[in-house]
Image (tube, rainbow, N blue to C red):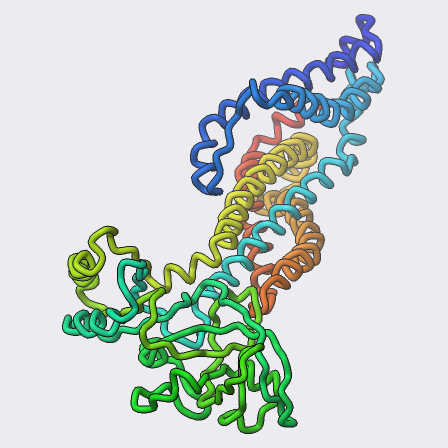
Length: 480
């Protein structure tokens, strides 16, 4: 086309304007399709991210100028290269088909395919690592039992003095195995307070601690383990006013050899509290944060939250029983409840959304990479059709020709892997730094992403290369 147009008097500027105009038209059509797709997908996207975004052309005056600017930039990026490259063809060489060899040597197409696949491999690798970390968070031992534990919010209508009687009545149901109360909820940040604590040398040292308040039954219901001393005891009437428990992080921080009997007191108070036991470390928050030194206080008549350990069978029937029973305790409000494991997993809601975003972008990136690979394979087989014809005439089998053609593309994918793996490793290692407790980066994830890219590349170019290998060589060599 370029050769004929130049032969009939078209100048380079005319050809450049033509190619740029075609690029602008294609980009404009793409923007219109994108806007229609955006209207279709925006409600689902808002539900996914928990936002209320809208494409309001009136209130947001920057939408139209922004789209025009994006369209212009994309048009120039996509159109400048072919405009200047194609318009520079010499008509005689073009009409004699003498540009094929030089076109085949062009590395820009191969470079773009390598970059596309490198991005795809990076995103696929990132998706695998995000899901590995989420699975690790779900399966990690938290230091307490989180399964089949129902948490009911105790409102102000229920007085703390009523709690023991309510627990006793609920435990009459055989499907309720244990009941306890706590002012604090695992999965939420605990309160912090300044306390004075006896260090290893016997001196009182001021330190900010997180603390939680529980009743006598909480440790047993949550199946927390004691590493030293004892738990709160109903027969010990002084526990409510003179005793505390600490976790292992507190023992480690103050290098206590024998923590039982150490003194603790609130800043401003003259009453000493004695450490009676050490409970194992437990993740009150997400794995993003280190386990902090924690002081556990006793309060038997405690509001806040009621924890109920349910039998694994007949959970729906048990919840209906609790709703009926709770309406007698608090008739003004319906029972507000949540399962502990559900509440804990909400801590990773942002990370779960990140994993889903990675998954969708991985699919999109792979799709775009396949488009580039299809274009490159079509171009390559077209450029080499005479070579394929000669090879077949000289006895090359179709299998050898298919392998010859696919080999070049697999080399590109291999190059994409070597480009993507270090970048993905660096990026995901930085992301994992946000977790105090995290998985180790497994090279199998990167290898699986690369293998996926290889398989996709073979499937993408397979049909094209098989078609070229099975073509009749007479058709490609009839003019030679």
